[in-house]
Image (cartoon, rainbow, N blue to C red; front, side):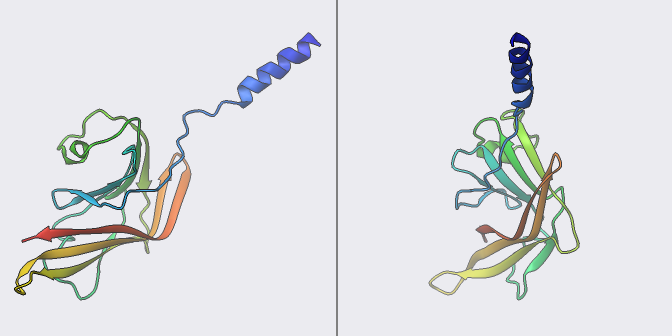
Length: 166
């Protein structure tokens, strides 16, 4: 009987190792934040998760578009990160990312033929009908994120809208 208890105990300890797995919630606050014009991010309520998109001045146009601009989703421009503590805007605005908070899990975008970022731009006018800026609406089509052999997939994901002023 004591051998049975010992074997059962060992098997229980071995079988119950859940590791450091972090479950992504993908539930972000409604605000779309930006650092400069081209680094866009959304965080969850605790600011421990962030969805980050990096674009260029060739993709965020300062003119109204009749059809949305389509930018290929790539590993370098779309990421989802889980941090060990809350992250602030300083993290996203730094030229060299700080070492804290620590990224626990980094989900990289997967490029594909039909995976793209859609950017629709409309002009904004003041009450005197003078152009004051542009509103950019961003949607992700066929988004696939991978991390450690796991995959998150979204057919159509509304990332958010932000304005650029003249």
